[in-house]
Amino acid sequence: MAKLTKDELIKQVEEMSVLELSDLVKALEEKFGVSAAAQVAQAPAAGAAGEPKEEQTVFNVVIANSGAQKIQVIKALRELVPTLGLKEAKDLVDAAPKEVIAQVNKKTAEEAKAKLVAAGATVELK
Image (cartoon, rainbow, N blue to C red; front, side, top):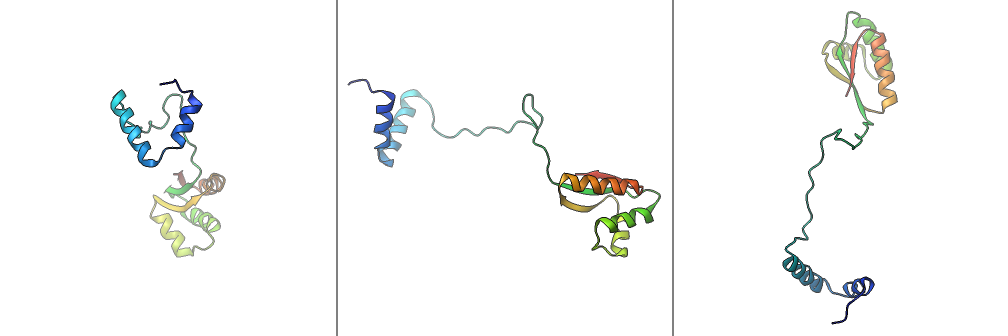
């Protein structure tokens, strides 16, 4: 049998039917003791050496503690979420730790945190 070049071999494989390709794969697996099954790679732990951690883009603003100035925190919260009534805002502040703003971008989350911290609350971004 004449030796085929890589291009000639690829051309022959391209012309094969699915059944012929399946048979070829099985024959190669048996001949070389390998498997063509896809390997399931275990995901590396976040922050693994040499791998950059994917930056979070969506945040939830959580009031961890309303602090001593609850009225100021309620006012700040109502400025941030104008659809909240006074009672709803008070209930959220009283129920701390409580998520008050969900699924916002980093800039909006940072602005909300700054406003709530200035009013006296302890705030976390998650």
